[in-house]
Amino acid sequence: DTGVSQNPRHKITKRGQNVTFRCDPISEHNRLYWYRQTLGQGPEFLTYFQNEAQLEKSRLLSDRFSAERPKGSFSTLEIQRTEQGDSAMYLCASSLDPAGEKLFFGSGTQLSVL
Amino acid sequence: QKEVEQDPGPLSVPEGAIVSLNCTYSNSAFQYFMWYRQYSRKGPELLMYTYSSGNKEDGRFTAQVDKSSKYISLFIRDSQPSDSATYLCAMSRTSYDKVIFGPGTSLSVIP
Image (cartoon, rainbow over all chains, first blue to last red; front, side, top):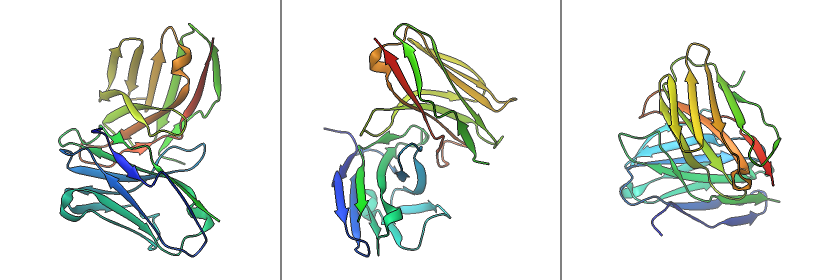
């Protein structure tokens, strides 16, 4: 499968715990995006990378959220001290310059914070 | 006011009907306009892509962009039950900028 891969597919955690998600983009894609989606809403932009550089982070994003993309390959999204409001689908997408607007999404990681 | 607005539906139509989905936006700097389709428990997939104003047709799908009115549309002809999904409009200022999504319209095509 050469699509965008996200792990795990589901994560259940208790409030206050830290969680980390992984995204493996399409191999030749140099851009990688993280979005969050709640029921009945469209994907909300969190952050994106061009290669290993994090180019933009949403101003709405709490300091508890951090993302990395070492060596410009896979990416991880960590949420520290999870809250119930963090419960959502976390989507990763990748794209290839110069068609950066054509995103290819993974199936997402569904986070439930109890 | 959100940057991108979309009627959430749900929209229910009989098989074979013509479907019209619409979005409005507030930022006149948007130049790239996309429609994504999302099936339940799946990530969105790119359906149509248009640069600036005008129409684009791909099979049963037609995308229209009217930048003067800040209004975009997606038309689906001869709708099929397999078209039942959530349709998300999306846009960006440049091909290097982040993509902003609308809230999505849920569509059901009834056999």
